[in-house]
Length: 389
Picture 1 (spheres, rainbow, N blue to C red):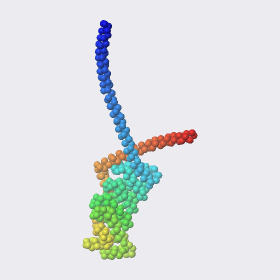
Picture 2 (picture 1 turned 120 degrees about the vertical axis):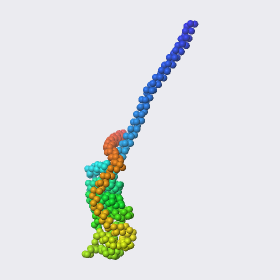
Picture 3 (picture 1 turned 45 degrees about the vertical axis):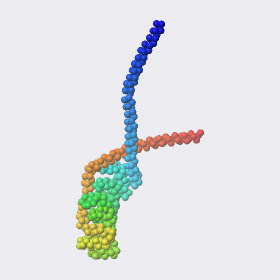
Picture 4 (picture 1 turned 90 degrees about the horizontal axis):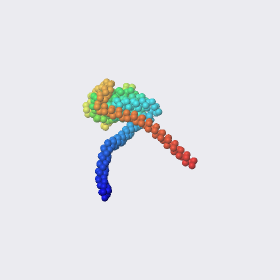
């Protein structure tokens, strides 16, 4: 009985003790688990953070590479357009691309725009060296006149071609546009459009660039449009040498003849200056009547400004003739503007991205070509195996 009692005590007491030990062990295990979790969790969090950071970096890198590719492709497309007019002159294309980036960094304008302008100048008949010189001059006109690169190239091309002038005369033209616009109620773009529009007729009739600026500016000051001024002057100058009866009668009424003592047709320039001199003796109604007879009602208001503005035209011409170096000073000042500085920073980053993108394109193209070759080989081997079977 004692044995049974002892067994019962051992069982119950032992069970109790064992229970407490198990409880204690369980508690210790819980604590251990808690500590392990406390230690492990930061590592887990760190791992998660690293994975997330890696994903962000990967996404950023992918976006960066895509951006580099994009900038590189844009410039490559512009280079391809230039190649169409230059041909396979690799050296010239390389120099043009480098020059475009240099001008872009200096002026804060897109290298793509510079290359596109270079292509336009080459397409207009200038050699590649002249085209690159004009691209630089065009950037000066962009900065001085706050023009778009495309507008700048249009004005330079039309004016130089109209005056039959070499690329070297672009600097002279830009100085004229800048100085006259600084002193009279016009801006570079309107004056440039006016001179470009009238340049072929002005040259044929013997007017210099400076004299043409003197003719166009008074009309622009009143009517605010270079294009309108050019159209009026085209009509007016051509009418002065028209042999129609109304024109001859109108000229005769103010003592001006179309022909010289030998019966030869005088230049439109000489006739214009004689009309302008005669206008100094006419009253306002007479001026308007004679002008209508000479050029028609539509352009009479504009041409009155030309015929009646000899002294002002001469003054503007004198300003234009003393304009050398004007644009360079203007550009130097404008390049100091904060807005231009920001544009230079932006374009500098884009040009750097383009250069990096060039490297990626070369490596990527090589890798793609290699993989393509492997796949083609495998496809060829598979086709051969299928045929032999």
